[in-house]
Structure formats: C-alpha cells, structure tokens
Image: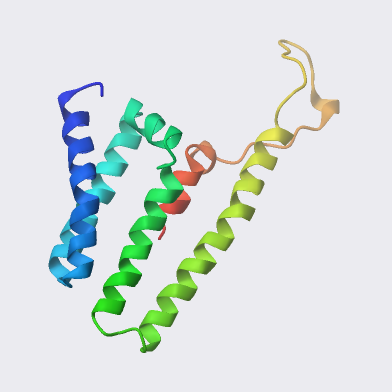
Amino acid sequence: VGSRSELAAALLMGLGYPCVMLAALIPHTWFFVAAMTVTYAADWYLHQRGSYLINRLGKVRAGLSIRFLLRQLMVILLLARLDLAEEPLFYTAVACFLLFYALQAPHGALTTLVRLRRTMPVVTRNVDLHAVRIPDAPPAVLLRRSAEKMLHLD
C-alpha cells in the first residue's frame, strides 16, 4: 500500500464486507446501506489511486467483478432476510443483476474490438496512413477503465 490514505481505504474495504454481510443477516437496512457505501467508496478510491492492492486482489481471485458480485449477492440476501423473497422486487433485483452480468461479456468484447481495430501492426511516425483506413477513436473517457465504469452502474 502506497500511502496512509490507501491503507485506510484498504482497511475500510476489508472491514466493510463483513459489515455488509452482518447487516444483511441481521437484517438492518441503514447499517447495510452505510457499509455498502463504505465498500463502494473505498473500492473507487483505490482504483483512482491505481493502488497496488487492487492488483493483488485480482491475483487472489478477489478482482473487480467478484467484489461487485459479492455486493449484489448481499443485496439479494438482505431482500430475502427482509421477507421480500416472494415479492416482485426480489425477482426484479435478481433479473436485473443477471442481465447486468450478461451485458458485461459483450461490453468487454466490444471494448477489446475497438482497441484492436485501432492498433497498428508496426509503430509509424510521419507516414501518411490515410489509405489504411483506421477508424476514428471513440472518446478516451469511454475506453479508459471501461470495466470499472460498467460495474459501477450496478
């Protein structure tokens, strides 16, 4: 961990997940919302800082997608513990989460395709490449950290 703020964010994220689970099991909605907010904020902060911890979490199978999936499963657990398992809200939440993850594969494929179509086989400088017909790049904000942005839509 590179700084004290990253260490604090890592500790908040590490303590946040057990708190989210505890809040879902109790069930206590406000505690759940607070703990969930802490995990989202810590995750976002560590990604913004490009923390070494984010890389290490990916290596131990606790990458970005798994952390978001865990949060979503905790939402489902909270709804079930609030006796909403037979309500349309429960089924809607499950369907939305499934649809959300189903859209991630095409999104990743599209992002990769756009990057690959714009990659030259060799590096060139001061050569007219008009005849090669490389498509214009989409705005950089769409391609930079695209998986993280897609996951934060949940």
